[in-house]
Image 1 (tube, rainbow, N blue to C red):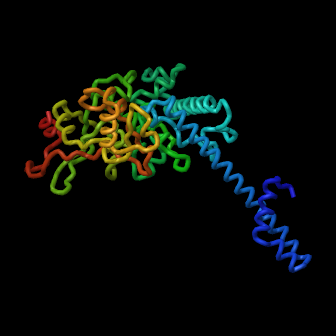
Image 2 (cartoon, rainbow, N blue to C red; image 1 turned 60 degrees about the vertical axis):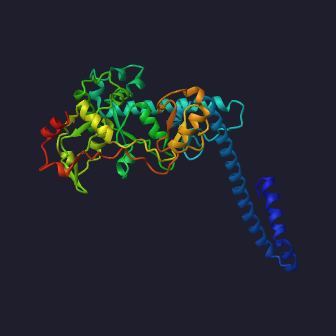
Image 3 (cartoon, rainbow, N blue to C red; image 1 turned 180 degrees about the vertical axis):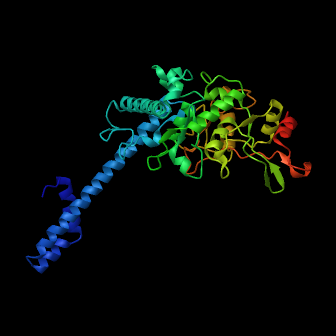
Length: 387
């Protein structure tokens, strides 16, 4: 009948177990053998599906074992968030080809090569999207790196802003504004094949706001990277937003530079994108006052933290306090007398990697109690008060 030997053997065993043949012998009916043939073919198809499922599960377990070993040996914990572990599956359109065999001798080198090729493909696709969507930006001296072989370096510029198409349609806007190669790669690698967050588009509005923010802080957009803006840690007001009255407290949003980009792409009220975006830079003293009121972010009470000094949390991340306790007890020789552990070096944060929800950016900051104001101050007055 064209079936493999193991399929026929399995089907016959199941048939005899069900005493189907014995019943046919008792009946002694010629027509009943037609029913036996149909029944056996049905069992053989089931046996094929069962065997294919077993093979698929075995390959999946073998792949997971290979990836765990590769990740623990060759990838530093600080880079785990940029590792496309959820996208490696060799079926349903994953990074690895369908014929990839985790048990072959050179599986580790093939895995490394496929991941490197995927990284390069993502870079090339993003650069090409910028070329097609905004050729004037490419031709200008703003991003000369895009015209040479080091195009991937240009993806670190703060002026290059991308948006995740899936996040813009949803209620969580974690990927509304993605700036910097690490930020982009982390967002893509935190998704799964079933919920793909890799459809990124060039953001004209985000690009314009990034240029305005860099002008306020006196940075050159041709050389300023997203990391440079992160280190600056400035705070801004959106001049297009008025004060909000909530629970007896009047406040307005003081935003980090990345939150400004998210704000302009996910407008907070109707007609907000019809007005030109004007950003106000808080003075150093005002920004420090705001930072004292900010809650910790990333969130400390989520199991999304790991140790940056070992591979303990490769599979099971923990809350911030538990990881800190692990580091101070198990790695006392490495950290020594460090007053505060550094995120990205000692502590590792896995945004969205082990969770089914998307982490929101930090909440707005309540600045002015209503009882201290006889009337809502003007934009000029609030800047003066904060200086």
